[in-house]
Image (cartoon, rainbow, N blue to C red; front, side, top):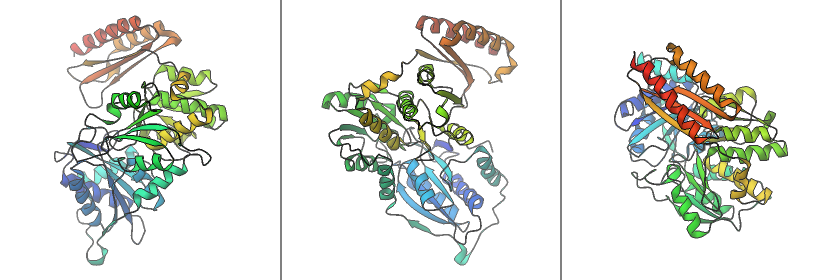
Length: 451
């Protein structure tokens, strides 16, 4: 069996390998075995988004866990960060999320959190795969009263709503603000409206009528033009668009202009720098974040460190080095002072608190960062051999870096899922970007064409 875990758990078309009920049951069994520990009645939380296939996979995972003598706590539709929170606050041994995030409804996925609310590192995911591959736990089947049971936790949503409201400063209120919310017909469709309404905002809602098939369908963070149009139509103060599992947010300012994760991190990091709360004056982001973000942080007395793509790697670096703010251009932002993973609603609350503290609209706050033009080019290759087999590519990359100097950036990386080499170049001069992308693409095509 090939590796089933990717950069963010297991993901694929529901009812097609690896997202089958058989595999879901095995993942449940493997997770239960791994986290069973020495507790008399160990327990694992299971939550999901609003996809039709969630019912099928939820039952399969729960069956696998119970068959290993571990109890299940079912919380139903809840944002991914909410499941991480419930896992930790209820002292569960692990948490499992059934969601394919921003993917269309026919896809689904499985993500696993440890008891402290952090996503599993590669080492533990590999251990679960090994247990499945080797059938190492097939004969471990408790009987009679040792079999696990499943219980539904009815107040999970309420607990999470209270947690989110407590991350917002007690001396502030959202009264007088009009906010557009697009919940992507996903996991945040009840939680997000409750949080912002209870804090006093007037809401304009969209994407809050899930039917199992309309999650991320022309709505949510992949379609920010929806909130942009509604902000302009209703003269709202800002718009918030979550993805299917609400661990990320994209915003629209009071003019309807879109702000991605880089703008959000710039606003929050610079505010934290000014008040002295950004640990070691450092923001963590990935290699995909815009150079303009890095320059903005440096200009305000901080620094930025980059990791591989994936919010899990951002969190790992933050924990290792003692940092408290990090994220991705896609809108995953991690405030480790409050949560263990990216949380779209929590992130929106932090930005709102900066708006209120500084008494500035979002359109003014975002001026702290100027984005550099960025171009992404995908070069298809016959065979995805390692880049280091071609010294010509590294020679060309070095030449381009020298041309760009401190005012530009180049990144070359193979796709993790396709026979494609990705080129990303940033610079102030758009024409120069086009020229250098073409030059680099020709070099890659020549090298891989000769394989």
